[in-house]
Length: 192
Image (cartoon, rainbow, N blue to C red; front, side, top):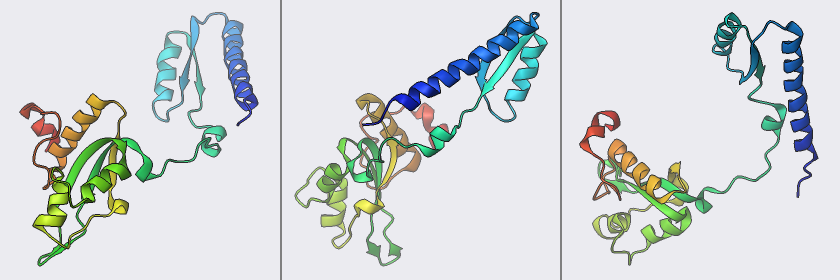
């Protein structure tokens, strides 16, 4: 387990920094107060001018620190173990005209690997991917390494909407429907 001391030191340093801003503000006396903002190049300078014109002291804090850059407290979860994802499967087969262009977009609450193995199972009667690689185009295959995670969403409802948005936008050929949720045609100009 990690020692919590560096976090407490960061908090103390942040509090000391804000206190120094307050001290500078009280030293000047004629200011109305102060505001602490994250620094964004090109935006922060303009905000400082606006706040200064209203006699408000502006202090900026860095958004990227050495701690953010260097410390990664957890290992990344391997793609196949991620849960709550919207994914994109591309057929790896070959047609007479070249590589197969059939694609599928789906979502799963379980791990990507579990759902992918269901798509590969020949006995699956509900999977469009299984139908394609085992019945419609024998010899075609799909690879877990080639699966793309389009989005991660733990919420069931939001994940279904994201799946429908990706299906409408990317128009995969193997999807029989628009996903779990039906999007209004109002969104077509934005998604297609």
